Image 1 (cartoon, rainbow, N blue to C red):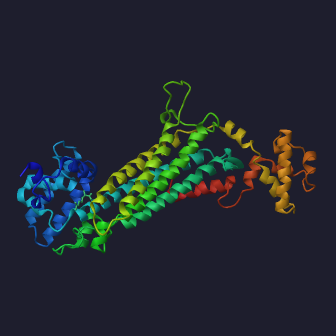
Image 2: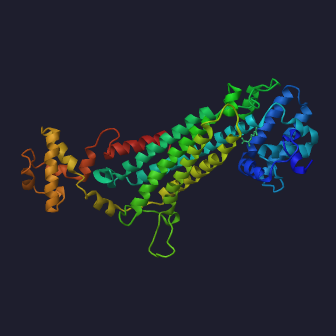
Length: 463
Ligand code: ARG
């Protein structure tokens, strides 16, 4: 037998070794070795269960536990001798155990299959990663809250259709993103319920013959509950689809926010300056300060969506139960986790580097007749039916455009031509601060509403 063949977990039935290119296509150690910590924990829990049913003696269990602990330390120290052309992380660890404790190592795979083992590893890994992503999301939410708190009085034009619409507080605009990321945070907490389920004991697909206590194993591994159908347990990946979907939504939110950072920092708009630490120069144009980090985060959202779509395609025609196609779940999963993690981290830091240009904001809010709706509402409050008020205001705007004037520059004489409902108090209407104050409704952009939201969040998150 060749060394390579003897290192396999399944050599007995075969006369020839796997073709070299087939090895390259199918071996997954490079990808799944990141699961080593979880695979070792799963092996330790399995050993405990095997001891409890008498397959291992207490001293064998102790030896295996200790040996697995040593292997863990070697992995943590990135020992370069660990890998020896193994098919995957499970084969690698079993080989390392066997090299150390001899034939006892060959008992380790009793009552489990790589089919229940791999998904048990992934579930453990994902539980931890969801914790990390949630922490990063909370840090981003804090960065948004801080930026909003620091810029409570700044007014900007709110847009619809990317056309100037109505004045809003910059803080209100920022808190809109807060809401989106807070829902993302909730979604990750929710999916945790469907990740936190122990599949070990399901075997290849049918269960196991050893009467292993699945609840004890689940408890040892820190799972809240155990899976209820062995075939589903090894063949299901919908919890990953759900998770990847949540990651895609988070990346989409980051991408929208990044898009605004790109637009706002353009010299054409000039609302913000992003710190040097999060911008780059051009190799040819010395004046350039490019928002590359925001652009890259926007770009990366595409790849993360691709990973979700890819898993949908992997799953859609698979018969029950485990099929090797399922091995393809991990590359996209790991990539999405890495991408969303670094993107959340950078975005939060980038927000901390931003300064607002109040002059540019004030100039922009005065463009595009953002107080027109105020006039329509003023007329409506004076008894003019809103549809008619809208028509009159449209005519006023047309006149102002013609005269190259802002609405607030029109004299009372000019305005009363359009409606005799207009009088002296109109100057309260064409006032940006007053227009904000009038939006005094829960969730509105009135300064005291925004202050209330900031205070509420401060208390809720104990900032
Ligand atoms: N590397 C495999 C995966 O990730 C492990 C399970 C292999 N199972 C098997 N029956 N070949 O899916």
